[in-house]
Each structure stands twice: as C-alpha cells, then as structure tokens.
Amino acid sequence: MSPTYKNAESHLRNINSTWSKIVNTVGPCTLHPHPERQPYEGLIRAITSQKLSAAATEAIEIVQTDVESLHSCGFSKLKADAVHNIANAALNKDLPSNDEINKMSKEDLLEALSKHKSVKRWTIEMYMIFTLGRLDVMPADDATLRSQITHIFHLEGKPSIEELEKVTSPTAPYQTIAAWYLWHYPKH
Image (cartoon, one colour):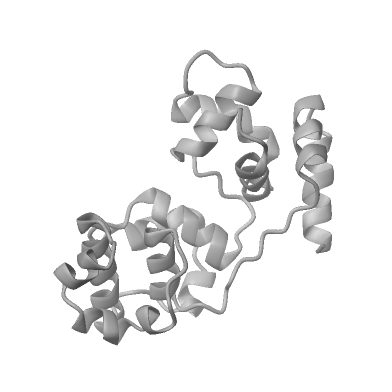
C-alpha cells in the first residue's frame, strides 16, 4: 500500500468512529488509477463504466464504427453517442493533452471537458479518480455514494448534493479514498 493511502486511511479513521468503522470493515485501499491512459481512453472508460477491449479503445476504430453499431454491441444510445463524440474530439485534437490536464485544477478540468457533448460532471469525476488518480474528488451526485451515506449516517432519505458534501467534507484532502471506501462498504 502506498504511503499516501496509509495517510488517507489514518486521516479517515481519525474523523470519527463511523469513518473508522468503514475503514476497518473494508480494509486497505486497493484503488489503482491508470494515469498512463490517454484522455479519450480514460473518458470513454468512465462513460461506459466497464472494461473495453484494446481494439475498442482506439479512437480511430471508434470513429469508424457508427453509433448504431456501438448500440448493437450493448451500449445504450446515449453512451454510444458519448463514446463517438469523445473519439471524434480526440481525433480533432480537441481534448487537452495529458501534460495540460496534469496542470489543471479540478475546476478547470471540469470546465474544459464538460464542453464536450455527453460528458457530464460524474464522467469527469470518474476520469479524475480512476485515470488521473486525483486524491480529493467526491462525486457527490453518484447514486451509490448517496445511498451509502444515507444508510451509514442514518439520514432520512437520500441526501442532496449539499448534504453529501457536508457529510464528506471532513474527508478532505482524501475524498477520493473516502468515496472508494463508501463504494466498497457492505451494502445494507
């Protein structure tokens, strides 16, 4: 386990007994981001939320595959459109490079990537977590996180984004690790 993850786990345990229980129940964080991925590949993986074959991650092959063919392979129409749009943006060099992305703040990255059709905040946050390995990302509109927060913190109904942010704010600067723990905590 990386020293950063050890520091994050210690930080979470020290917030309160609930966070300590979450960390102790789940065990060591095994999050493995993939910063070697190109931006289009990380975004496509975030959009589809599943592993794609190596051939499918090549933007040129995706662009040459019409949206209906992607749809027939099991992509929803919305996801097929989104994947196609990202592949076109990559070919048109309309996505920032890895070097540019690594210099961007979370807010700048959200702004730069959300201008692309079908790329929403949740997709960009998944990209920041699972590709870039950013440590302080809490995808507040993630349905699983909202459900887990409701259950674990005994809230009445699913929390609003503002309520989720309030409950998870003490986890900063390790909100990504906190989100990982919430995703892995046993479901109710």
